Image (tube, rainbow, N blue to C red; front, side):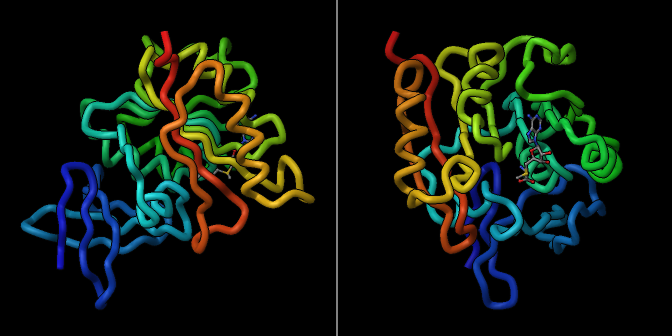
Length: 226
Ligand code: SAM
């Protein structure tokens, strides 16, 4: 069984349903993922245990506003696992501005991902200071934030105020243990959602079990009340 979407594909490999994206750089792998050819097009298998966005797609997303040509601001690029799949999806007409502050991690990110992909623009900055990113031009369609900081929601909101277009989407990955280890993850997520209510309409919220125990994901639309 195979089902296709315009942006990613579900395929059956070794008897299991797997998610994959069309490889932006043929022959290139980023984190040891399998490559698969179908009708001469190469796909990279997208691992839900390595990428929270893949986990969310396995669990079920009501909205997925990332498509060919989308402009994404990604906070917390790390070594680029998820950024690389978003780069596959947005393709040649899209762009991923990828912010990472840790220099050692950023070096790996440059070597593995940014140097091969023309649609990825690395920004070696602290996401707490969005006004210091000089390489972003215009507004973005999506802000994706995965930075595992106690003030992660406030940082994401500030980046949205600076760069997200009216009606654009925020994907907020919440590391619940970074905020409060004593409370159940669902309660922590509700607390963070309250901070979004003024400027966003909440579209979906989820925990990422069974792929990830410590994280939740909130998808919200910016400024839709006005
Ligand atoms: N999103 C990545 C993925 O799916 O492949 C994993 C992100 S990892 C959980 C969090 C990353 O955020 C780390 O690489 C960390 O260095 C980065 N980070 C944390 N605080 C940051 C900040 N204030 N500014 C920029 N990057 C930050």
